[in-house]
Length: 279
Figure 1 (tube, rainbow, N blue to C red):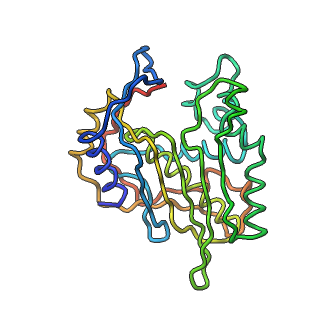
Figure 2: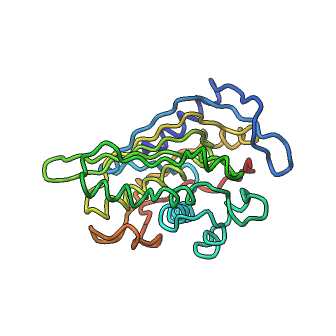
């Protein structure tokens, strides 16, 4: 059983056994009913990517290709335009969060990255002094939130640190998330930001190091308990999935493409489970 599978089952059991119920919940299901959830607070996990520990479960299939394309939309295209995500990458699940008839998700995610020139600043800081302790991406922008409607960012902060071990330089990353759907989005969000970490490491010719994942509110929605019990009953497959970025060291961050990523040795348990998303 992989480290990710162990953590997955442990978190599910902890939420079912010791979680508390949400109150005054914001999300709704598509049928209009309130999407209540059972949750725990302060979940933390550590993965050493250099040792093959990747935050992806084998207990159900995870749609990594579309998830990674979302990272390109946010940090390369730096836009909130849904047509870019759909026409360029073939990803449409963000359409449920369109603000009015604007064709956007409001001043969120990629729009904030562009507004503050975040990627240019992070890459320059790491180039000028890799050992600085100020490599922070924050998508939590109160001014932007007041400017338009839109879903507030869940994965809102990422921090990067450089570490030298012998002759090798490693890039570590920490993802902080205010809210996370344990069954649907947990491994998607984690692997998205592992991909971002790998892209930055490749830009500088460094190795990927550790990935730290902190979630403030980790929850299971009230229409997902049957799926949660099914996951607890499943036994993982005998595989050790790894994400590989097939470009040379030193490849410019903005020249990397989604198809350069490959998920190897991934044989998840099937069939896929179905979930009604909370919007």
